[in-house]
Each structure stands twice: as C-alpha cells, then as structure tokens.
Image 1 (tube, one colour):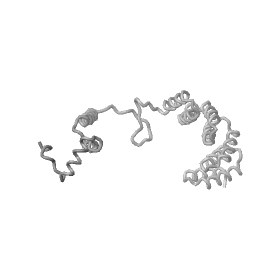
Image 2: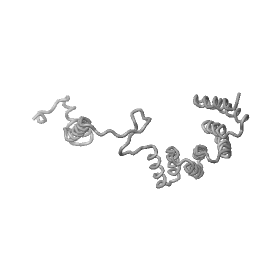
Image 3: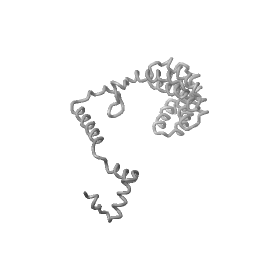
Image 4: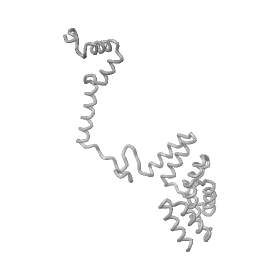
Amino acid sequence: MKDEELYKNGLDKVSQNKLDEAIELFTKAIELNSANPHYFNERAVCYLNTGKFDLSMFDMNKSIELDENYAYFYSCRAFLKSKMKDMDGAVEDYERSLELDPHNDITYNNMAIALESIGNMNKAQKYYKKGNELLGYDPEKRELSEDGKTMVDKKEPTEKSTKLAEHIEEIKQNQKTEEPSKAAIAKDVFTKKSVFKEFISFIGNGFKLKDDDKS
C-alpha cells in the first residue's frame, strides 16, 4: 500500500476516534515517506489526544523542521505546549502562526486564552476582539443561529415580543406589591416572638381562634 493511501486510511481512523489504529497507519506512511510533514503532524495530534506529550512534541518539531512556513503546525505545537504548561512557549508559537496566517480566528482565540492564563489580560482582550471580528461576531449586532453553526444578524424585536416583555415586567412588579406569600408568613411564625406566641396559643386551643382573636 502506498504512503498516501495509508495516510488517508489513518485520517479515516481519526474521524472514527480510533487513534491507536491511526497512529499505526501514520507510522507506516512515515516509513515509506519520511519527507511529508503532514504525516508527522497527524501522528503528533493523535499522540497529543492519547496523552503521549513527549512523542507528540517530537513529531510536532519534525513537521515544522520539514515545513517551517506552515501556520497550522505552529498552532498545533502551541496547543501542545499549553497542555504541557509551557504558556510562554505557546504564546511564541501562536505569534509565529499568526505571522504566517493573520486571518485565523481560532488562533487569535487560542492566543487570547494563553495570554489570559499568564495574567496578560489587556493583550488577551485585544486578541479576543480580533478573533471575534474575523469570525463576524459583534455582541451588539450579531448572534449565533438557531443551529449554533453560523453567525447571523440579530433580529429586531417585534411589537408582539416587546408587549410580552412589558407584560412579564408588569407581573414582576405586581408580585412585589402583593400580599405576603405563604412562605413569608411561615417565616414570620418562627422568627417573630409575638406571632410565634399566637401560633402556640392557636394550637393549644385545639386549632381554634380565641374569642378575642375572632373579634
């Protein structure tokens, strides 16, 4: 079997979450062609997702050695470094990735997370903002679609929805001014001495009001 076929079969195993089988196929592909950086990178991602960080780092470095101008490889290694708690190294790789591909919203977001983790909040916010711009997300004007897959313009509130909101608010206000609830009354019984005495007297009288209470 050719290395291209092995690689394709390996990707199929990844999609099925059969990572150990994918690693075997990528390894065979590398044995036939050790000059293809994508073979190393895909195996590295599999190693990362199975917790074999050292092996993953070896393959990440090898893929970058074979192609030092491919932005995605740096993003992958940055993510691995963040998993290994090397946040400064992760930021460095994200920076290099964005130099090569300045329009990747995911990389901007991951960079922001890395910066936030080391306490650089001001810079993190700038990267979050840039990522949102590239994604087309404006919290004032845009929102996720109902299926959660795309960004769409926010709908203007209709007259019906506005009236509903006003009605709900009116109900809330009325509830605040209505008679005390049963829970509030029960609370009074056990927290106010005067009310508690009346309650004890009520029980002692066979659950009947005294004559003076009736009046």
